[in-house]
Length: 266
Image (cartoon, rainbow, N blue to C red; front, side):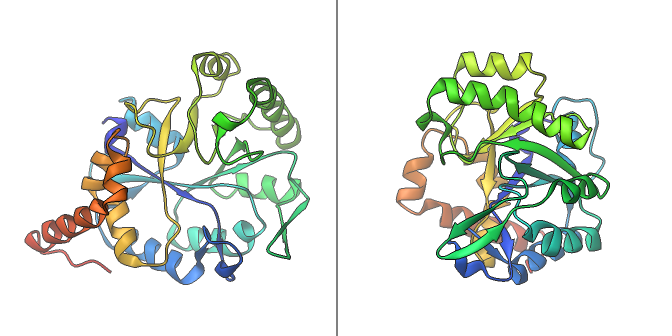
């Protein structure tokens, strides 16, 4: 198993009020996606098991491996997302900045609360892996390197001190670390760096390009979890694929493949 065979999904949030922010997914769409995973040939893995599989430490007997990650750590996760994950028995990873815990943020005049420390502790006992998240800017490459280095070090300690568990993952929405930052991640004991595809480079543990799902359109979801999309997602040519909407072609190819195998989406 190699990283290019592993789909790691990135959600910004799933909410009963997805209209608050354009990258949020509705609860209805999210439940439909989980139902599809459960009814078809997928193996939902924790991030630890997913990367163990990628490194050859574990094997998948059947089913395409998928791992679900959620950024930001809004209260919606505990109230709305976790019950659905528990219903299907699916693990997940939640990335949060320790500076946000117990606070709230204003998004389009609406106050959106983050999870509390007690809530995060409960999540750990419910099949959820907690990781650190850099949310000072959308792209890590837009931040001063010293700020990034400081957060990589301090966020891990703050989360570990409060939660009493090892923090092994550092996530951002976009961007890949330079060599010095990668060396720091390794020295601090992070197992992997989770970002968003395309990374425009060969996948590795410190440049894990996640596939962002932020659209209620089920056909787009099917495109993003297709083998064709997974094959193309980190290629340097991806910007042109998106510009000329060739990703929609990938969906059509995936639909045809499923029909030939006798499978029906949805």
